[in-house]
Image 1 (tube, rainbow, N blue to C red):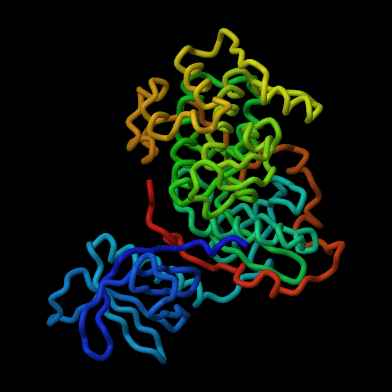
Image 2: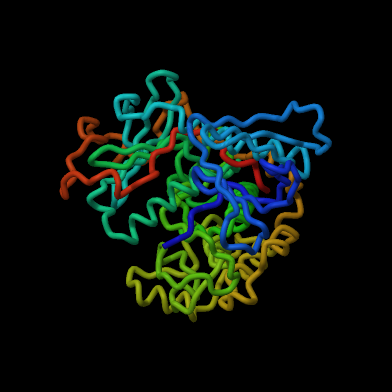
Length: 441
């Protein structure tokens, strides 16, 4: 079972309750608990701060304290903890993450009645995605609903909870983030950012291929999004055109974290699970020899090729033949693929993961030489293509097979396996803050 995703961790200096002495401790914030340890390598915590709706966190105003960057955490029934951070930025980061959890605990539970369904915009094996409007604020969101009866397999429950954890924690300009999650007896619901520009698959099917300027910017934004996940020790494992959404301004968002793998610190062989979309699977995934974060860079190489050419470099309707091509077929480029793009794609599609290009080399590659990476991160690079969107609720960039579905059963459906107890999905609900984590480049 995957370890809980850590919201924040780091060294802080805590004042003792009895002797008022200051001690440096390793703090780890997991879910609703803050643990502190004598050392970073310690396994047994010296103390625990349970964060509830009655907790408080604030900048310390005690004037006699000589320590800098102090904040206080009030745990009712326990005590007020006085803590010093190494910098003002770190102090504010801890306050923000703690306050976000307090806020989420204080909010009333959401239900389907709090949303108006506008249109179906997607469907998967476990449920569907709808465009919804929140009744009190009139904000638009994408709501992903999952039938509990179809995710009762233990491994799938763990994967669903992992998806929710990543969506909750991810705060990055090129990743879809979670706004709320809740459940009823039939379903799990995740309320997400709504990207009304449709997915890249829709636009590639419409135009046949993308321009060099489009591909270059899409690739750069994907690189930053994937690198952010990798820095959190997360493998994405499902990069494909359908999982890259466009906003009306032409910038993108990676979506669907249903196949993520958490806590992968081994760069070479972090997991052996065979999963993903066959056309985008790296050789080491197919061979089940163990793989790490570099498998995502292979998928990026496939995606780049597909955006230039209109089809992936290795394809067959027979999965076994497809896998053989991935493992052995030569990589061939049509004339329209520029030389620097060919070089980058070839290095991304290196079959030996130990020789595959890494993030530092990717960002320095000549294909991206026109970019200032900080400006890309700040979304200051103007996209050459912006999807046509008449209004914020426009769904014309989504498949008509979904958008023309009858809404009568779009969200509330009877699970074929009946009602499922909520305690199987303990801690799924989230009514949280926008600032669950400080941005990490």
